[in-house]
Image (cartoon, rainbow over all chains, first blue to last red; front, side):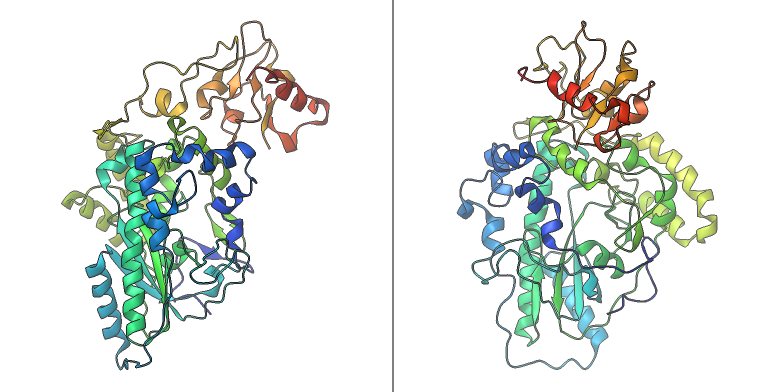
Length: 401
Length: 82
């Protein structure tokens, strides 16, 4: 099925694409030990050394009991029975407005609708689900026609305390927040008499990022994530796929395509050098910026000796700002300027961004018992006789710049 | 896979690579003539490659033929030390 028209600007289909097998995605690969035994061991032990982290995380990965993981419990039933009494939909635009309002009422920050492109549906699933009778390795059959894409805003301040337990806690909570809203929206549609399935963190049969781009929530950034005009990349994404007839949205041009060309802030600040400085590459028939997923994932081993999601690229993105008139003014100015002239406005704005927000945005924060201050003493090396100064890049360079 | 430090590092030991390594996996002592990458900790990010003034660092799969044995030399350095 073709993507919505017009085509998105931030990625381009240039060749034949294949469906991705969910077992090729990072978490299943780590569980199989394909990214190294050390990482596999860490995921099953060190990832859950902190009780607070365990509550926010999925079952496994160090969490001792799945019944103490809300994610695990809520993920169990992504699909349910459909009401046999189907409610007619004479006006798809009106129904789309209704769905968006209901989704926002249930907790979504932003909502967009697109046709479900089967190329962004996984070919096979990677996770077992006893409740649904689904097993790892089963082929995925998702014949739904539409994808309702939901975005959930993360806390701006906590994400600025990046690469710490504080930002990681908000990341974990954001993942959980996607689940009840997505579940309820899918249930609402099934109660109207149409098939619908919830795809959220921990239980998904689709890749939400290209669908969200197609649904007009934003553009694909250099760091491989969605960039929303107002919330930047601090949006958790989830999707409801359905047969409910809906009017679809169009991909948007917010100017992020041009901004990513010049900004490079995510590439400069990525501690694991996973984000490219260069141009786009073709992967699986898609021309886009290609990040090094493996080194990004493996960096979890280094993040303060803890298992945490670093989110430095999310917080350093120049679109990541609090809601304020000057941010709206800047993003609208870029958006409303013709693409060929945008460079004239982007470069001064990037200069202002560096001046006021720093080249490496970061904030010292104390919260609960956590303190994300740079460690003052260099880590003691465990190699006898080693005299090089180890202090970990995030502390010695990133946060002192 | 891992990155490997090879012969051009000998007697140069610039340490620029240590500053950029996010994993702190490049080590060396005062008595060592070169630095070594711990293959167990390296995450293959390649950040050390442009930082090396001697062009001594290569991904394991792209090692020049004459320096293939440095894979073992780097790994051996950490044997029994951890």
